[in-house]
Length: 302
Ligand SMILES: Nc1ncnc2c1ncn2[C@@H]1O[C@H](COP(=O)(O)OP(=O)(O)OP(=O)(O)O)[C@@H](O)[C@H]1O
Ligand SMILES: [Mg+2]
Picture 1 (tube, rainbow, N blue to C red):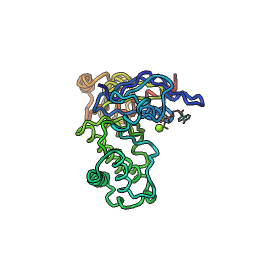
Picture 2 (picture 1 turned 90 degrees about the horizontal axis):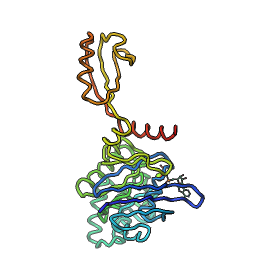
Picture 3 (picture 1 turned 180 degrees about the horizontal axis):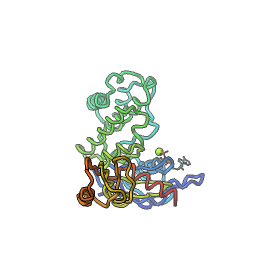
Picture 4 (picture 1 turned 45 degrees about the vertical axis):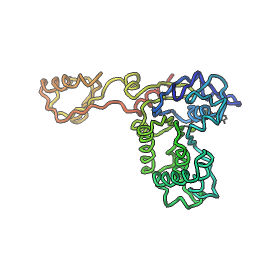
């Protein structure tokens, strides 16, 4: 069974904006899916559809076989959902909030306490556990809302920009936590994010959205092959005769685009045979950011 399945899922808001347009996608259990795209692309709307917070205009979706439009409570029972504006109780402390939500998810009081304390520790909120939420900073709230959704050990996590507002250390720790949940517990993760560098580190697959449509989908190597094929070779060398390559040399640096790493030895040989001295060669594969910009620029041009 797919962990997440969308078939021509569409949502048009009453005011007429088509936020999600015939989106089809399927995720296997244990995948960490990076859902990327500019502001207004339709990411949050998709998460809301998948978690039953909105009903689709047409099309359908399933989360481990459950239809969020028909049985949202069943989807919530197996999901952990972090949205941009996590709702918790300001007049309760961090620990009290966790104990409350743990009970809602059917954990026993003893289980609630053990898990809450372990999560507070894991998310570095030990000192804040006894503070009222009204005194929490944005980052502390964000971390507590992650603790809250991890209490019942969900099979699937929907994380809508879980690290927005976090300092770099916390963002790094949360990404490490997401990766370890997927690797050690097999949790499926649907992650909406603008942090492409972290997404490249932790996601197994990506979907790139713009204006409600999926522009491309696949693993990093699949996206590289489809969107930005080839390798950029940076060469530091002296004595390369002018005109050996079409590309201009900047000082002793030469940057060349080749179709694959297999072309590098031949390239170096060509420089050496022409009398050049090679000091350094590096091959650079396109990053997720390169792919993102290429796809969104193409979309803008189209
Ligand atoms: N409640 C709403 N009513 C009407 N239009 C909405 C509503 N929520 C979102 N939209 C519109 O739907 C489109 C998609 O918005 P959505 O919030 O899903 O984008 P997003 O990809 O999550 O963007 P961001 O990166 O800014 O979070 C936008 O054009 C937005 O203006
Ligand atoms: Mg959003």
